[in-house]
Image (cartoon, rainbow, N blue to C red; front, side):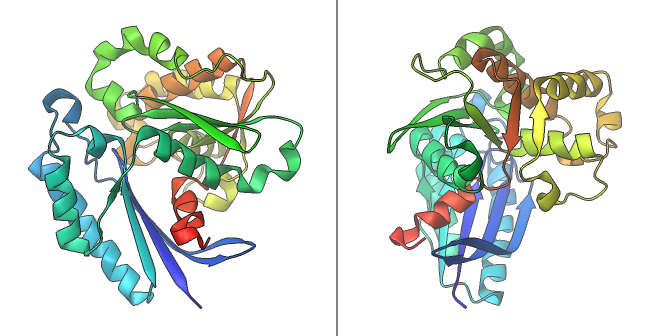
Length: 295
């Protein structure tokens, strides 16, 4: 059994997916997520800090050891918003290479979006053939909207994410204007909206009251705009300590989740979308689908 692995270094978390890639799909064997927050402070300083990088490198060491244990054939590593915006991204990329022996791909916002789209839509194609599929990816540092026109995948990205908004609340005054830039004029109304990322998956876990996160229960779940607003109001009414105890919410995400919800709520309103379908399959699956054209 040949296994491949994808590692995504996001602004808030670093994630690993080890999977069996076959013609009929990608089948997970092992997954792991660590809140490394490599993007901490990037918005203010323009640089990845030594402390944030150290956390991420330690995580990568663990992930590479896990890949060796599983005898993974190929490993693909990508870095997204925080690293691509950092003034010291070349030094960061070199440190990652030194630890892993793999040159990380620093993705543009558009490439990040397209990989997320490829991963997100796979399980929802049969039930949405008559509706335009639109994927919303809310990350720590950026938000992407991706849709297809025929065989062409188009993407828009803005530098507004849950961590970036948390660290710089002044962006709130420009949030609506920035997110409006995501919405293409020719987008079909009543689109089939699919959400990926920690904000939407956390909201489902909170809605279900999950004591332990279960991706099988989260994947494919539906969130209404009313759900988003109600959970958002509930979380805003709590202190940080109280939010950290909410069932379904990772304590490490308790500080940024209200800001991710603000972004989600505003985009759904702009799209006039009454609901969003949540996908557990995102950029990690897109990375493996396009690994040397094999998956």
